Length: 229
Image: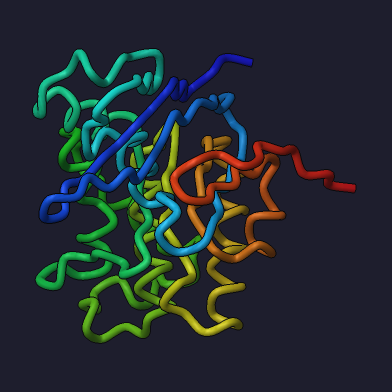
């Protein structure tokens, strides 16, 4: 299988007052196309920082990230944004829906950015898959947290991304709602055969992936396969 993400000797530091804080230290791993991959660790272990670097939302201080075969350090801001728009989907803990757009309009934003004509039908199909076709004209403020995250799921898959980054996708949901969202996430992912990278502190959710990368204090302490019977 081809590698969709190659991370090599990645490091990230922040300056706090007179102190330099190491957030990530010598991180190396890769992910194959179609793989489901979890990044876990306690708060402050560098999980979200690592996800941002892998997706090209931020730049590393040293080391390299190659996404879909392209070294992100060779791209400027606009080129990285274009690559994300083409290849990457996102799901965030706080949903990040646009409040002035309806559920359907939120779902089709990535398609419109790609210049796809008449994206409404595929947007409605996706809302139907997440059980929200009847809520397509509702605004985020009219939806529950679980419904907003299901809209975010539909949006993430709307442009058929090669890789999808999910940052604590159930972090703001109760257990039952979170389970529904996770089930939909894996169903949609299997159907689309997207590479899935989930950042979570939930070990149960992590175990549902094919591989788990464990971080502590900005370092990798394990990179292991999970056994699915």
